[in-house]
Amino acid sequence: MKTLLKKKVKVTVEKTDTGFSAFAVDYPVFTTGKTFSELSENIVEALNLYFEDDGQKVNSKNIHFEIDLRQFFQHYRVINAKFLAERIGMNATLLSQYVQGRKKPSVAQTEKILSGINQIGKELSELSLVTKD
Picture: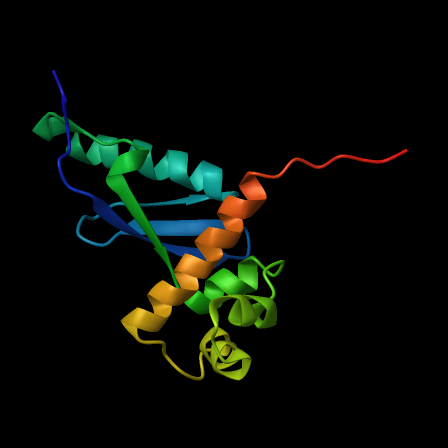
């Protein structure tokens, strides 16, 4: 019987011309996918193949995805950096420099940006759209 891997597997995600690629930071495991959902399924499958002989299994909760800030904003262009900067109380020019790769944010700044993105995502996920006649 397989047991669930006890630790999180850090997976780096990169945007490609055809979708996404991902590799496990600490293991020789990599995959691709046209969408993020497909990529997520593929990395779970690839990691399970890697851990098969060890009697361990991985699920999506075992995976910690990381993506470069610049690539994130290039892919999710719908997120307006100026709006986000105002929302999180950050200078818009500074956030723009992070997005363009001219400056590297500190860990605290990165967490502040991610927290703002997560907050907006949570708000959007709780909405229902209606049309008025």
